[in-house]
Length: 222
Length: 222
DNA sequence: TCAATAGTGTCTGTCAGACAATATTTG
DNA sequence: CAAATATTGTCTGACAGACACTATTGA
Image 1 (tube, rainbow over the protein chains, first blue to last red):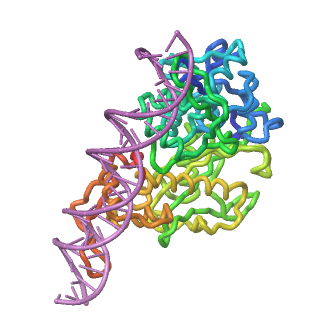
Image 2 (image 1 turned 180 degrees about the vertical axis):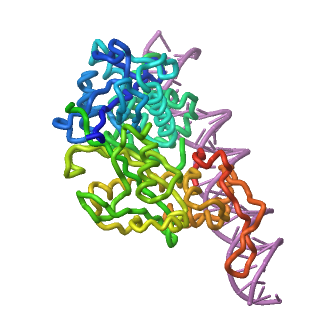
Image 3 (image 1 turned 90 degrees about the horizontal axis):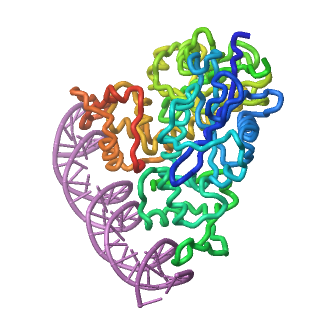
């Protein structure tokens, strides 16, 4: 069948580390590019995976030990030139998770790299990451997407820093709070957060259950 | 190779017909669903097509006789359930073109159907079309995307009707013109348009050459 | 009490939408 | 001139951002 091609899934696994947007790369255990850092990825298993999202969840778990973060299809990269083995289709996903989740999985072959200073990666993985970062930056302007980078519970000042790390620019505190209220995806957690320094503690928030696997957008940005 | 799967491209070919958003469907010439109306689509030919966009252009041309409209990747639909022949990957694209282009191609097996009143289509084509329509509606709110539905040259009132057909709601005339000016993707054509009735003629505009294959977005919508 | 950060109230310039006035064509 | 639609000017309410004030903690 000349219409059958190699089909893979690659995942751009993003997190905030040291106040910057970073991507989790895993060491390739096979040729080509064996031993190089690359996006976690793998073949679709038609027998096991019911659909692409299934495959993405399975592959991410195999490569990083992490199971159910936020996962969204990004774009498909396909063609003759991107893989030395020949014509290939890669359905790319992006995943978002709090850094502590990656840390506590301590998978030996996974490391975080800041997205703004990546070296040349195998295949077209630089392009894929760039596309993912564009998407995050864009969605951070008007949606609740970055909340998935902030962990289970977080304070509004911490969440604002996450948004600022995504967007690469400082945000107005009053506007940010107004927008979060307008989005209405957060709920206050009864407890309060202890602060590192000596100052007023901040209210803890979490994503409402109905938004754990989704997003909400605003008509007007920021 | 258990990782090789059937790979196809399907195109949601959209146009404005009778003031409503419509999709071009073509009669299937092969099983399954032979003779049924479905999205123009076909197998990726690894020998011919350099990449997915290449394949989409080729397939759209084969099925409709139309060559280079605006074409953008939509999303990939894949899984075990969507095609009776087994696990399949379909990379979906959407294309936009003025109705007259479709009309003047008079391809016998192509017909336009309003997207809001579609019957049950083969495969998951209803889902794919719904995803495309969501995308257009969304992008119409803040980008120049619908301009590609308006033909080579058009007046601002005509373009506003195109936007309104996409969005399914009336727009404020003053705001619409302000936004178009802010987008700065249009240029006036020296000539003027004749009007059907007896009234002041409208200025003709066209997309600036640098935006023929691209979009421009606004920070704030509408 | 001071330092530090959280959270809120208020003012102001900007912008979307409403309204309406003006412009230009045919009959 | 009347009818019809294009195009532009102006007003107003809503909102984003700036500023500053209050709140609450530890030292």
